[in-house]
Amino acid sequence: MRAWPAPDVPVLPVRGPEVRVHDSATGGLVELVPADGTARMYVCGITPYDATHLGHASTYLAFDLLNRAWRSAGHRVRYVQNVTDVDDPLLERAVATGEDWVALAERETELFRTDMTALRVLPPDEYVGAVESIPLVVAMIERLRDTGAVYPVPNETGGEDLYFSVTADPTFGAVSGWERDQMLRIFAERGGDPDRPGKKDPLDCLLWQGERPDDPAWDSSLGRGRPGWHIECSAIAREHLGADFEVQGGGSDLVFPHHEMSAAEAQVADPEHRFARAYVHAGMVALDGEKMSKSKGNLELVSRLRQENAEPDAIRLALLGHHYRSDWEWTAADLERAEALLPRLRTAVKAPAGAPSGPVVAEVLAALAADLDAPRALRAIHAWAEATLDGVGAEAGAGTQIALVADAALGLRL
Ligand code: 5CA
Ligand code: ZN
Image 1 (cartoon, helix red, strand yellow):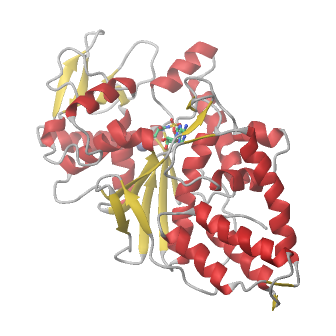
Image 2 (cartoon, protein in one colour):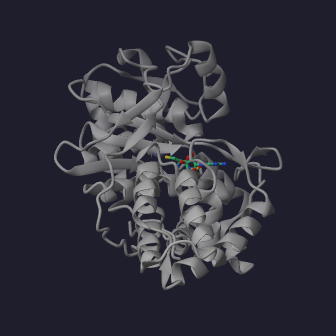
Image 3 (cartoon, protein in one colour):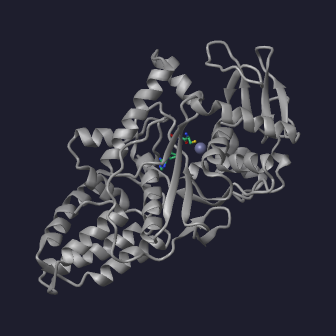
């Protein structure tokens, strides 16, 4: 699949520190120095049945900060993202609106590309659809079948679906660290089917769904059908990044079951290797007191704000004002604050001389290397701008250095 155009990332005259991020699996900070100079990151992409909302944007921005922090530290980054272009919510929406599911997925994926381009989010090196990855998924299920971790469950059409035995992975549970009770409760809420008759363990998850009438299906050695959700990300990540890659990322709603299951499947298929070194999760953005979601419809869309002439840099600044791991609620005041701050920062960086830039550049890079603390980085830039506007300091060209680090590390054009 085609990604979107990359914004320029200026090269900084100074190098940032090595990056430490919070890993959900260990519950602490881990320093992620790539062994061979290339940091590898997989971030779960959209299910394209509705437009990009600010929750999605905030999550992709978090991993954009990580991408930039690695580059500032002198590493190359290999970034892979999927598109879940066949799955229940997408097919259900297509049926509800009478639109062809392929056309719906293509339209919303294109809108997502436009939104990401406007927000200056660095594109993945590989942008990979679930449909085009079906051969990879089938090959991985075959490998799992060879290990004995796959079993059939009869379905209502007289055919069968294939399930993954979670007990085949001795480390199952290590990504979320959750107790079984909590897993069972959340599994049902997030696309799982704990009560389905015929399963060996209520937590076992669907790998391959046998063909249903009116559903798309593909021929395979597993019979005609379509892939389950978690195996899509296991197979795409392993194919395009290899094993033991640095970061598996997404919003915190993916900790369980999605990231737990994709790691378990990949690790049973290849017990010699871990799936990822760290599991990094962005907090949930809410609107009207509830998690912003396509299924509930409480959304603020990036595209709507853009249509209303919000400047993408102001949207980006508004989102960066919240630490990526916190859960927070979007309000119109977020954008108003950013729209007021942006021109002040821009005026300050244009001043021929300003407050000393060196310590600010160092502080911005240190803040981002310390678990992607964009609010801390912005406080440093804001304080520099206020000092400069107050006439403090006489460093010629200080503004140029501040604009450079704001662009490279935060993706903000000042
Ligand atoms: N296609 C799957 C991942 S393989 C999926 O979860 N798609 S999604 O469209 O539902 O979400 C895309 C990304 O946005 C995921 O990383 C998800 O965790 C994140 N996300 C969804 N809602 C929010 C929200 N309200 N706040 C922050 N991030 C969110
Ligand atoms: Zn995923």
